[in-house]
Length: 282
Image (cartoon, rainbow, N blue to C red):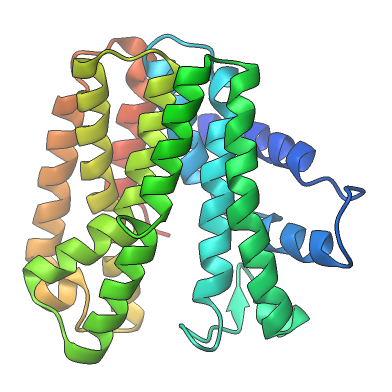
């Protein structure tokens, strides 16, 4: 049986080690910007997005080390988004991962700039893929990062989410919110792993569809876990009901697994990740 727990820890350790090289303590930063950027990245969460990129690369039989810069670039974007989401003008959260949020610890102005720094630096990190793969593949990686993080993806999804919080949402608009806000980075991370591995069009499409479905499951289960403590009408349980939300997640997982049925044992981490997201308790 595949040991997902050990796999996740091993890959997260690899990602953290790589992020340390990109954001060293003694790096050449302006003022205390390095301290604040590192505070926003370390210690991290599950590192799900970069692990997904590495797993997609491995699924196609490629050395995952080739995908590490691209994987880390997606994590930097994710961390930047958390810093900005926590700001008083957005969600106004005061704690994340058991410690004060960035703006509470360092002030709103510094947190804003640290988020800016992470978002821009992510593209420099992504460009370092050129040290490991072709220039063409590197350009595709950078384009995927821009699309997933910008107005067609995460940033656009945040606008849709804000509108939903003020004016309400329908089932269709909720799907649109999370397809962009949460799903775009998950989709993009998986795609860059496959691109770096030299995926053909059919393989890339399979990985893309898998990631889109996994992103949906990620958000549904997230909403289910949150709903038990804080019922939110703008959520999958709030709009679909708990039973239908669980059914949607199970059906999406089944479809995600079917998408990658063409891949062999090397895709076992992707299969285990899909099942884990469906059954996760935190």
